[in-house]
Length: 293
Image 1 (tube, rainbow, N blue to C red):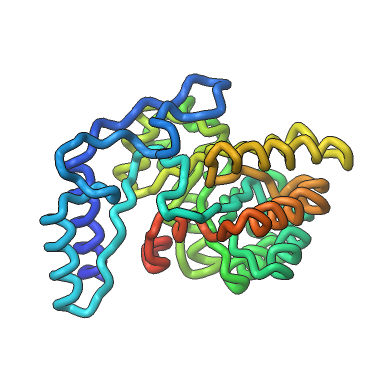
Image 2 (image 1 turned 135 degrees about the vertical axis):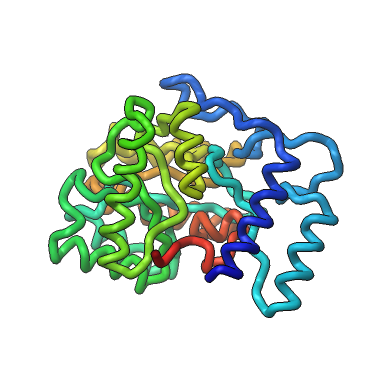
């Protein structure tokens, strides 16, 4: 574990050394972070850095060290920086927030029927408690079915309203619960309401969290009816057409489970795109998605 951590830190430090300062979060209500079109990450200078944030020499050093000891080098996915889109071409990441809840099992069934992996940003206490037997079983099933689990905080607060210790408490409480349930804690998180500020990003960076927003918000929470969910599906189609790749939906709403998930899968497949987890769409090896202590 010490070796993997060292390699991860090497890649991350090289990324930070050659990247531009963190871009402030987008203004409330805009629904999009202020990144250059199609990137989803902070702009990088024209100094010879590669697309993963490493200069060729740094990447080569990391790869050579890893090869020498038989360990795959860690992808240089930044921490404490808002990420809103995939970096692997042709991929789309379906993500679901706020669960687990009574509709989560139906979402999992639909994904399994089409062999589609997704990412679930779970809460500890939101629409229900993650500690109930039913919800613990749902979380374990997410892992068993090949999905990625990310943190959405313990109780879904607006992190920008909290001080550093309370931000840490929200993250640590959920991490501790997930360690008990699945034996691992996520290194990926999504801030509730996409709401961050400098303190939030600094704290999450210090905690080594990858901060994931989205560049397609289906707004399924506002369209939770049989007819209304068609609006969310059209938002999804339009978002794909505009180059979007990380998709926000919620597994806690009935019509998301009954219609939106299957509709999104059909649309992805009809366009010849590949639905993957957030970690995969960022080129990050699965070994980096969690910590075990």
